[in-house]
Length: 188
Image (cartoon, rainbow, N blue to C red; front, side, top):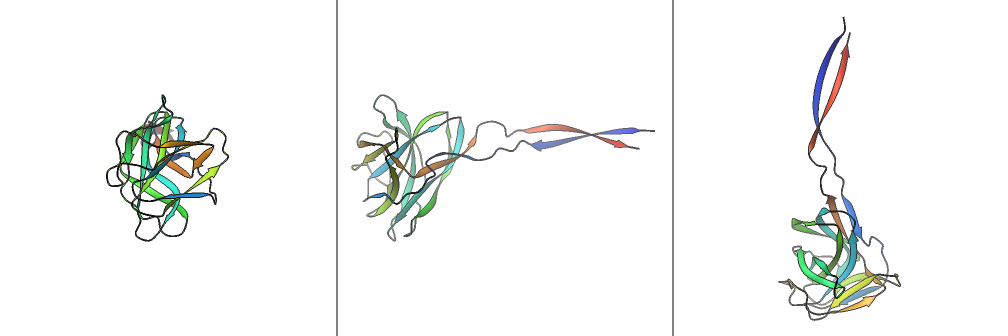
């Protein structure tokens, strides 16, 4: 006699983290003093929730940085509205990839965004690649304040063909609900 036992398992559908931005390194760098900021323009191909920004940076001892996400102002091709800012992070004095993690993840739709940094004092150093066709870097030498970043960007200037070494880690929207999987076990 053959008996069938139906076993229902609820297994989560795994959602893996993805990235968008510039994951390359370089020896070209720029730096700024307090209340200045720089961003790179990048495209997110699908909706997702950003948990952190990672930048190729360094700073003198005691200098902190914050990661920034701004919307894209298509009319002026510059950063628009502040969407997320990370808590202060000390990059360290040696260049390397540093995580700037959001206290509250930032939900984004597919589209163009500006990922960047602001620093608390002199010699916050960020790295950028030159001669990248179609790339765009925005630099604001009169950023409102490090402590309270501008909610709508009102100043700055663009540099074509430069790309800041920064990327966002995100989880694509959807796909995280448990799904039922049926298994049939044959017992003889």
